[in-house]
Amino acid sequence: MTGKRLEHHAEQLAALGHPARLAVVRYVVQGDPEGTAAGEIQSKLDIPASTLSHHLERLSSAGLLKSRRDGTFIYYRADFESLRALTDYLWEDCCKRGQGCC
Image (cartoon, rainbow, N blue to C red; front, side, top):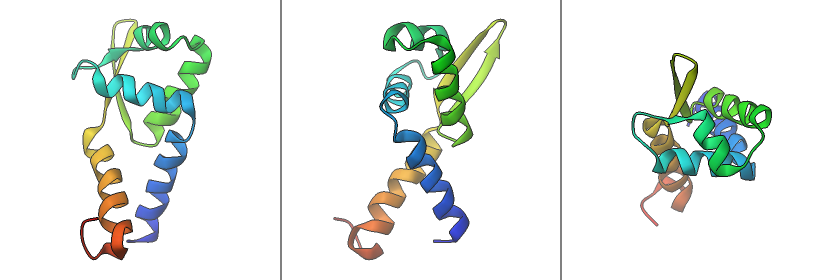
């Protein structure tokens, strides 16, 4: 694995390393494939709006969430390709030193 990819995965894991951000990703993954409104996430997870904004930015910056604006609303959806690449790294490259499935 190249150093750049390793750094990217480390950034993603660091972004997931906060309980609120992990809860956000879990909620968004389970949500509408077209996206979940930030207000709904805030309401459901009971996170102050300014704090949620910070967490959403961190997750988006790490490439774990994608966003789209629709008027005054911002919708977030999981970047499943990126999440899959991260989990593939954990299972394929880490487990048994890349020599097979656990």
